[in-house]
Image 1 (cartoon, one colour):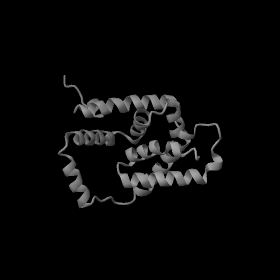
Image 2 (cartoon, one colour):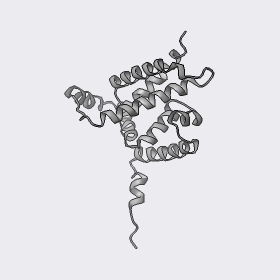
Image 3 (cartoon, one colour):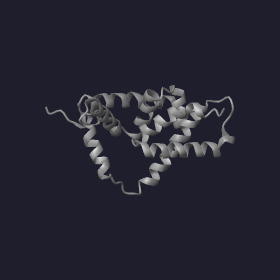
Image 4 (cartoon, one colour):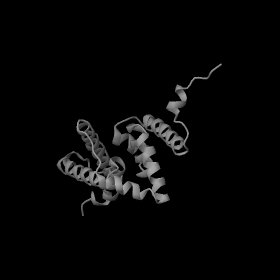
Length: 168
């Protein structure tokens, strides 16, 4: 049995969280698996396959972001109607609020929050996936969680608070 198969549900979930769109998530997953297949000779047996796959997905996603930054985005009428219909359900509204708050995090903070909190990766695995020091993982996670908490509570983010001056 192919060892990659057991990681598909987590990869799919992370792709969906990154792209915030099911179709794009499936494309990202497909592109990730294609690259993993082409680069299989680079994987070291005995090393962490899950972290290696997430690292590939991260790199593919970042490449797609850079490529797509040059293209204008559009939303279809069907998507707009679906979003307004979903807003009637309280659970869906909370989920939308969370997705909105996640979208307001910096890319760096969102990636770390998703990998640690959603995908349950260890800090060392996140550091490997993103190719950053473990201390950077910890600080981005702490800042990301705090900003997410403030956004969900309707408080000004720390970015806005730090820019305010106290009148004397």
